Length: 286
Image (cartoon, rainbow, N blue to C red; front, side):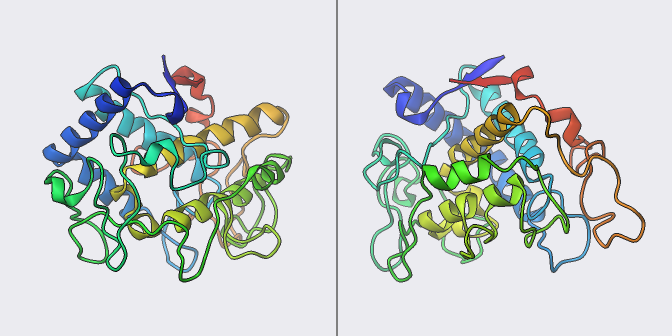
């Protein structure tokens, strides 16, 4: 059992070890496998087939298993490394510590939005985008999306989601109008806005983080570690409220076979949500 720390509390050495491990996974080709996996399982409401990762009740457990697999790959490089979390309700400016030159680098430059600073800048020679949708070989960011401004979510946004005592609700997709899952995943049920919380952060960063290949930007892992932490906080706040749906949907439900109930194994690992409910078997947040 190990710990995941707030990124603002990482020492210089811890940052360097994490960056070095990520770069080694990139050199080996393993990193791009993770990006491709995320792309493969970005299945929307409008598409056919199973939907384990997005717009679905298993959004949280799927990404928990996904982060665990990535963390295992990192630890095969350096056993002392774990994924830190980024609390974007607090560290919510372009000057926040995670965007420093010695960590994730900063915003993209005007024009093509290419990231020019930090270890993941293309000009450093270590970070070539191979699986993105634009064809650009470089990491892109567009903080705040000036052409159509978007802000990072605040504490009040998160608190509204955490106060919902129901985990998820029919129709179990992006248009579910209640439930903690969609309030955090962020498909527009908070006051009629287009996006909220998780999705809003992806849009605020923009560039490479704005599509299905979002793990092309290493900040993806820090963002989703915080999403995972929020799930654990919701579980603690609502101990009587479990994962829904608890059982397989009835035969006449249009979501049957598309979403995953508590004990239904999620691809590609054949791991059910029930098997990753308790993160403290693996790690704790500090």
